[in-house]
Image 1 (cartoon, rainbow, N blue to C red):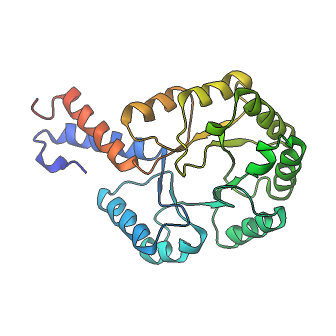
Image 2: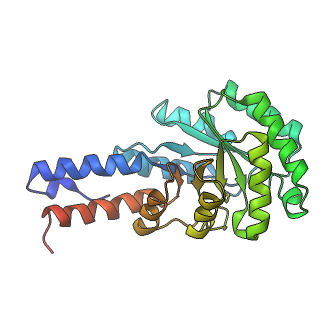
Length: 249
């Protein structure tokens, strides 16, 4: 992270630090995926702690929650995914995992919908699954996004999937689970066109630049998942320093 102690004008340095902190608060940052290790989690936490910034949430696997809390306590809001990334767990198992997360005091979650049901155009099954989860857990989590593999869907499939979620009473949609699937501006814009002001949209996957981050913010996204959050914030702070005259060109 950029060393602001080298900026002679302390007012500029503090302004840039606050703006960087604000940008970080809009991002989810962390380590998810079955291939990730305890060392991966510790390395991400160490890097985050050195900045002194707090993301909207630190994303981690359920099994790593005790490790994270042992290191940082309640410093960060934690986010966990259920049935990541393909959504192939049974509804009963998804329900059980959500109950477990509640008992662990994890209030920011996402549920991966069954990819097979989506790809097979069994939209009634998609609706049924989402509706059951909404009925059981509505209001118990601060965030509960339903994950769709948008990049692998046609516009028509996107429309039909979103229609099923709309009927189920879903509030938030995570556009791609990450996991090598990169969200596009077009996917988010399509949801906005089809359902203006209907869904809280969480873009995820391959968001690696400040330009991309800010574009998703311009599209109205309030939650942005990116493992590159710290790099993006650093690029933002460097840009702001140039704008304010805090560093030499």
